[in-house]
Picture 1 (cartoon, one colour):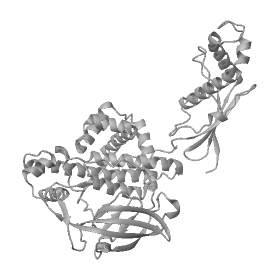
Picture 2 (picture 1 turned 180 degrees about the horizontal axis):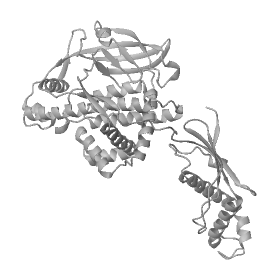
Picture 3 (picture 1 turned 180 degrees about the vertical axis):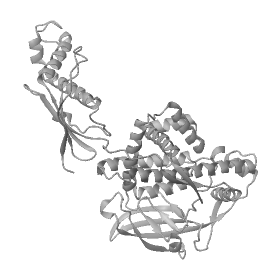
Picture 4 (picture 1 turned 90 degrees about the vertical axis):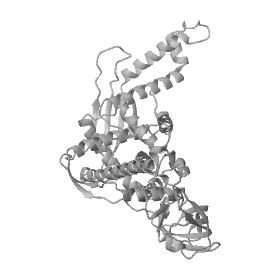
Length: 496
């Protein structure tokens, strides 16, 4: 985009007041570099520099030590000369900090990142004004789309006995054991294998002793292998099978994006699955259930939570499509790369809150990783629009909102709310949770004004095995995959 000046030589007024509280008489010029990027030039007049210098010397005088003078008795002129360098650094730092704060609070910018400013390159002049520049990313300016009266289809389903039966079967399979087998690998078997990836003669990555359930597809962090079950169907322990794998267009290694790489899979072992019976010991192991009926009740609630996640997801996709249909503005690649990790983290929080198990989370995250830049661009545009709506409609986060979110995550993970909160705070994810709360409230407002049509829904049948490995050797957005535990409210419904 071509550069244009949106605020040229904009003076910031200086109301009368105490010197300490008096704002700087700044001249601010803001250049629009692109939709979300601004170049800001700030000029501080000489009068303000002199005022800050006088204040700094006044603060230094009582403690200044100069030969021949008692503390606090040295002449002002000598103190200024003797501590010239230290004063210059102090004045420059305070002036720039106060000027940046004043520009930020003036409302002329809506920053979404920290300013890019090299303080060391700013020089305090002997005469005349101080001028410095910085780059900053800001929220894009756009006309708010119409959001009332949207037509939306909504998944609808009654959780029935067949759904619970299937989920219970999946839970038991997870608690089953794999026993050695001499048969060829078949769907549902567990294989142990070494994986080696290469591009031409160049080795890319290796994963040893990987335990993989045989399913039609095999998902990596940056690629997906179709026909995985067919590939290993004739493999024998000690043998090696090969296949080509297409690297995703958003893999971490740019030169490999969209390229075919070679997978060499060395089969080490094959194991068949033995399904356990639902005994009192199994019920206790699953979470201290007193009866099968209690377990079925927990599974039903788990399925209802996952159905609600699918419902929210499909409704939100339609809302997002309607809101962003006219959002043709581009977003800076650096911003997208930084936000990609946040998008993954938010996805994990949503999945944890809805009670998905580790395998399901890994599948969803691998899918998201392979389209993370495009997904992040859509999510950011949606976020900016929802944020504007939230501001206009006075939607805010409350302490009770955080408590409810953390309790929901804790109930699904089997951890205490206190530990969940501590983990989120330690990993710097409370702002992610805040955005999630605001966006969910805003979506609720939009959907309260929408027209709905219910449509039948079927739970997706997982046909993909996901593994934590990047074909290219580097993962876009490393994040913690949480460990699911089997509390009473967290019985696993088998990877829905």
